[in-house]
Amino acid sequence: MMDRENKDQAYLLGRLTAIVSKIEDKPLLFAADVNVNPLQKMSFSLVEALKKTDSPLYGELQEVVAALGVDYQLPSSLIAADAGRMWVGYYHQKSEMSVYEERVRIGKRIAELRKEKGLSVRALAELAGVSSQNITKIENGKYNVSIDILSKITNALNCKLDIVNKIAR
Image (cartoon, rainbow, N blue to C red; front, side, top):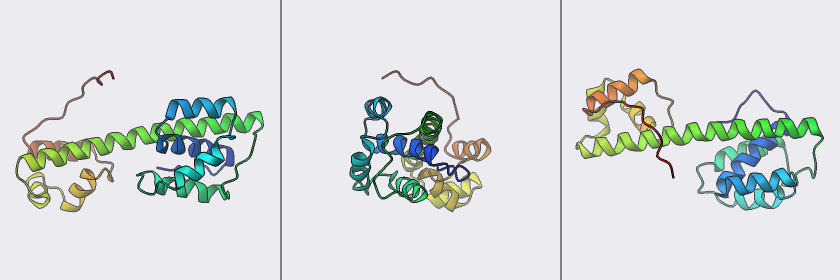
């Protein structure tokens, strides 16, 4: 998920903020705390987040920490321009995480439908004309699947693709 082109420290701090807030499962409260007092809460929260090795975002977190080259002591303040870049990084990462979560959701739904039909991964792959490796990657949310391939899979499952409104929670 990480934007490999942008290694700017402030931008990466924003990405780090988004990842930690998601791991801590308090995205709005966490972002508000960091917005009021930038980075003061982050050092403690970063250490806590790094303990959660079972999080699907753990690898991403380690990658950003490595790119920053921090020893878990983050800067206590940023100049205005850096603060702006931090928030750009934050919102960019939040957007990427949303896309990833949707990919995982769709993959899980395909796996459910496949199992309901009593199909193995290999059988679905043959019916859809897609490799079994791709079916596995799609079901695990590890593959950015095209609409064409998704259509082949849903046709093989005797389903159709549709776009629906999100349910208000």
